[in-house]
Length: 351
Ligand code: TXA
Ligand code: MG
Image 1 (cartoon, rainbow, N blue to C red):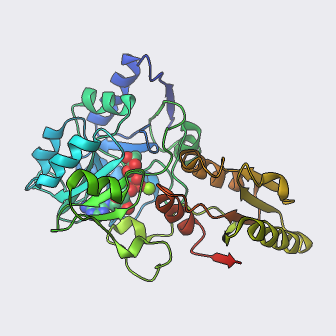
Image 2 (image 1 turned 45 degrees about the vertical axis):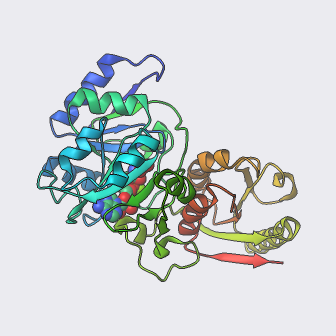
């Protein structure tokens, strides 16, 4: 299959491109498209055959449910068995935006879309191309991140092409995404809302909007890899670069010294080594490849650059990667959750 890449300017959306993509979706095919978080791999959410194609293209286990993308709140109402009052409040506060809500599903949603669960994940993305595609297709669009299963999520169309070329008919190229890590997932099916995946929308933001407590699934907190996470997708080794990745945390000078020591050891053994540094520290490392993820205080930049950097190390074929740790105040939990998974929970703490 030949994959057509169509560039679309977010400021001046080319209706023909969207129409062509919408037709593919209506016909049961796959289209990769940008959202504000990461690129998605979309198909008609209510068609079991279309959802199956997604699992095939990604090489993803079929017990891992998909997120249904909508462009209007009434669509959530149409596929939910009941709409919890929290869903309306959170939709008003954060949609369109990087928040996915889990509600009980009705019979309209096929089990292939939900990985056999009786709940469904729903999100209204804050991206003009994504919303135009959903609207034009007249479908709700099931879309996981548009990467091969186990690779970092794509934050630009070129990443999608690397993973999906020849496997899907079309990629809509809307440039580099704004946020760079996947949406926050909140489960609204129990009495206390629970975050199943941390993201740009934090626990504090949800609590403020709802005026009540929100919990975080203990299975996703960075250092408790032994607990089973509630979102099926969170249990898989994810976002993994080809090289072994180790995080080093602690006071800045000690971290730099420790990483440089580890780099020297590896280089002596004939290995190629990469380091994920910050603008503040990048000049102080002597690895084969040193990449700055951004300024330490700019957590939005850190989130936005993370997956591109992990993919870059794959291209350079390094053998080992050492990274500083980024437990920043607001989205640090989301950033560290992704990094910890990429590192398979290998963390060194230095004094
Ligand atoms: O930002 C995002 O959410 C991106 C963009 C494309 O919208 N999508 C995304 O999808 O990250 P995906 O498939 O890569 O991750 C979806 C996660 C998985 O961990 C999955 O297990 C969980 O959502 N999930 C989906 N439906 C669920 C459900 N009914 N109950 C629990 N977890 C669910
Ligand atoms: Mg994913």
